[in-house]
Image (cartoon, helix red, strand yellow):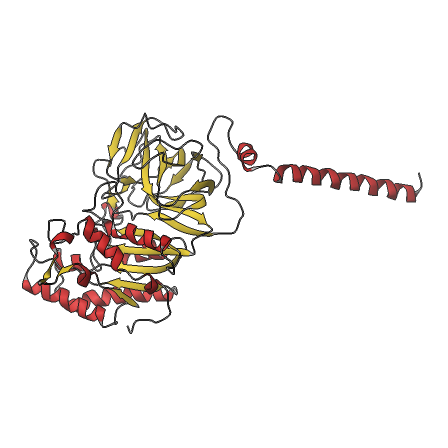
Length: 444
């Protein structure tokens, strides 16, 4: 064979290789979604399709702040049990990922299986047909989360509807010590004995729970949402007196408005309220040198607000517990200085800040004229535009016009401090969505 003939044969072989490779590539990438899902899933397990490389924005659709270690779990945690958290979405998307937290753990937390699914109906532990997805963490179904740490799952392709319930399930086979939890969920979740992570049926989930355990966030890849509004607050934001399982917190009302109203910024809303939370002071000290329960707004702002996915704007609704809870803060300047510091931290990240006035508590067991004076002084500074970029005046919206020291009866849950469902609705309706966008800054 001559050198010329050899070169010709080599060129022909290379051409055949390119053609065959292209055919294989087209055959795989041209498969429909179901085929690609089957390629990436176990033949016996749920589909586990990776998130598509498509246009869209990762935003938070749900979140809850870790608030402490669950009492009674110090020895075994949730060993040998499946925890099926029920959470409500603010916006939808085409892919999802979750964040698991072992913030209050004192031992490594081993999660061997986790899944996400759309619930068949509200407040139901059964997954809608075809929606259950196995979750992985850096490609593995099992993950170990060290004490004080959190981890974000890999993204999975699943169509997440807005204003719907998701089921996020984890299984831990071994004792892990204290469970990191959010105690005032106002949402019933479920627990089953054994590993029922990939069981779409809710029949094994006999035990109900008023807590969210381990789970601290769900993000979605959305083509309809431009960013996330993070709301940091106390029990009023946590919705502690709202109807269980009805999603009637004021943040739920705001999320609906941002999704539906013409001209409103297309942002999701995530709720970082912790009941009893204060601007300045932490709650109980942590065990063995770990983080304290109910950390102050200043302590948790970086993690719970600045660390959330796709954050574009911040709403701050804190301060009333600094006045009411021991040790009572009677210097309004310390409270407003703390709120200004939160605004400064947000501004350092280029974020817009809307702040709330402190609502009335006349008639509450902790009321005194002196403490009412502190509240009024804080509100005066907030309304003067010296604390936040914009103000939502919850005090004005809910107070009794004939007795401004107290909530209007129909907005009062009955304890003279926390709103009723109608009060929460009024709060959400009084918020001006336009305040979430703009460039004017507070005169700090």
